Image 1: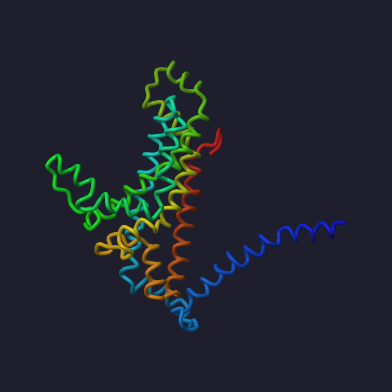
Image 2 (image 1 turned 180 degrees about the vertical axis):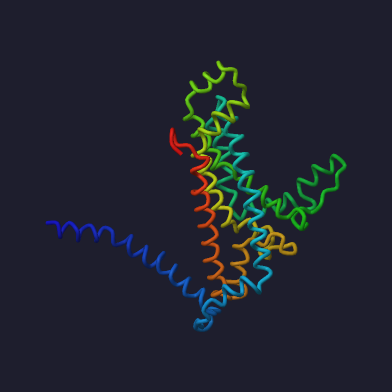
Length: 294
């Protein structure tokens, strides 16, 4: 009877196991093998050991530019997006009428923000004759071409990332509603003002939510691709100012047909994201509060 049950269990699990092995585990192992080869998609892979990783470390200046752009984007976009999302969530938590409507409206950019259409719209908004410069012109300011300027191009992508604050905002709003009102009432009796209540009650009670949003946004920011590809025309311009890591990886794989080098870049990116996530979990013990425990 037990043997029959085991067979039935494996039969039901077999579609998932086949998918996991063929569509996930197999490509992962294949990409690691390709990262140790020279492979252009038109001839058989040639084993070269760790040459791709050595080239990344010592010979490829554009690789370091892509790291610089990506880390700048992550360090700017993640905290600004979380701060903006928390601010909007606190406004919505003040008992507004039509909360469901506002929540849906603010969440909508998160659904559309990664799409090609919104990236194209964003490029038009920040072009020299776009809406932003037309508004500035009414105040006598001749704005630059934000997209084609090396000083501002990356910041337009950061602005697009912040605009997609809906997902963390919804999670912050759910966390705010779980904070007991009695704690705020007791703090008011003790003379605590809004800032004191925010620093001593809201932030500590929200640290598990902040931690969750922080980790998810860090992972997502390192993987950002579509906005940079569309706004820069797939080149990472101007002058590599928007050359995201994923964009350079795509260029190596599907423009230069250096699949081995691109696979090595992908594994380094996995290592970077894994290290950032592990560092976040290690730091959590010092600032994330779960009831009476950290």
